[in-house]
Image (cartoon, rainbow, N blue to C red; front, side, top):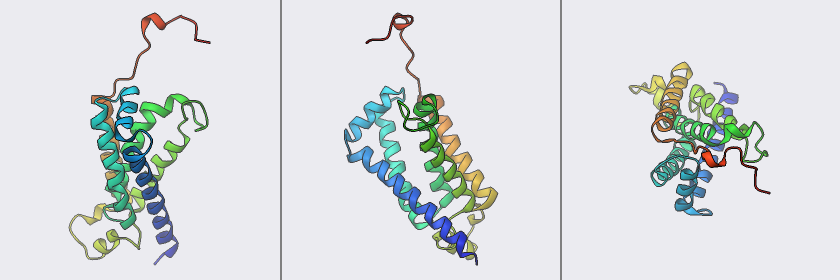
Length: 185
């Protein structure tokens, strides 16, 4: 038994769960609520904004309890990965590394992205429902940690993000009449 690993995975699961719960709650009930989130998605070129705001919010709220319980951890981590990759590519990457840069850089999103990949590889740890299932040798649970867990997370989360971006993201292009004109003062 490696309690250090169990503590580490528990801490990663809990902080990712809290982060996703807070994100989902804010999208649904904060500031502009779901309608405001939908308008923001539209403004960065993810359409239809209402559908994607709803799916992102449900994903964030749905993965949180899975992470807290350590249940299907690589799939929960895949949900985090998918949301973060979409945010990284559609909004944060162009703003540079640091989050305090105008438009918010990608350091925070990148950190959560790699944390979700690490958690997919680690699995739920000893204090998780996944551990109970693995110990009982339930069919399919061999995919809950290690290289297989990492691949499940990377393929499901990365594949979902790639599919969404390829089919629904159309970045706003500068208008031709704006090219070469001076910036407003």
